Length: 69
Image 1: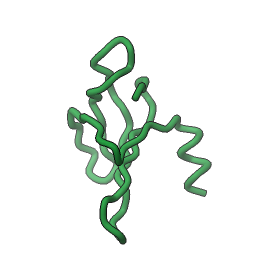
Image 2: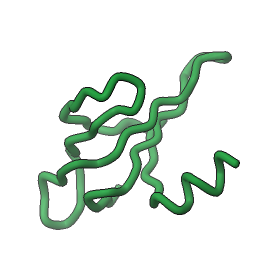
Image 3: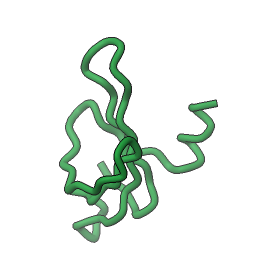
């Protein structure tokens, strides 16, 4: 997984009926864009150091806006 500052981290729910988590990547710890990432989550405006699992993927801002319409 590779990401840049400004990309969106999307974490799909592991349970039916639960919403997915979305957060903006605020900093990337490695020069090659690999995890972990500092992410500011939209649901509570908190920042965490995030190590993505298989349920997570990175989207560019434009792609996220198109898919939510």
